[in-house]
Image (cartoon, rainbow, N blue to C red; front, side, top):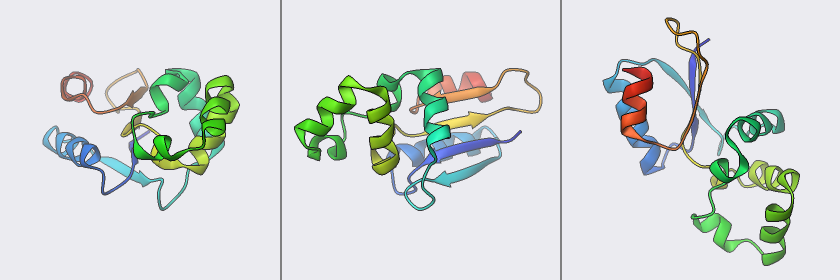
Amino acid sequence: MTITIYGIKSCSTMKKAFTKLDELGVSYEFHDYKKQGIDKETVQRWVNELGIDKVLNKRGTTWRKLEESQKQAADDSVDAAIALLIENTSMIKRPIVEGQLADKDQPILLCGFDEAEFERVFG
C-alpha cells in the first residue's frame, strides 16, 4: 500500500507537509478533496480511528460561517458532523496522511501537520 495525503492543494499547511514528505524521500499520492470530493466510508474510517474532534476543524472560516443550527447538529451527532464534512471538505483538518510503508507493519493515519511526528513516522 502506498501513502496518500488528503487535503487542499492551496493550503499552507499542506505545502509544509508536501515539503517534509519530499525531504524524507517518501513517495505519496495526493487526493485533493476540493476537486475530487471524499466518500462517506473514508471520512467514517478517519472518525472511527481518530475521533470527530480531531478530524473536524472548528477553527476555520467554513465552520464559523455555518448556521448555529448546523453547528449544534454536528455537536449533537457524529453522523451529522460526517455529513457536514463530506459537504464542506474545507472543514476536514489538513493534512490527513494514510497508508502503509513497505518496510513497516503498522498502518499510518495522521491528522494535521506535526513536523516531529512526520520525522518519527517516516524518518
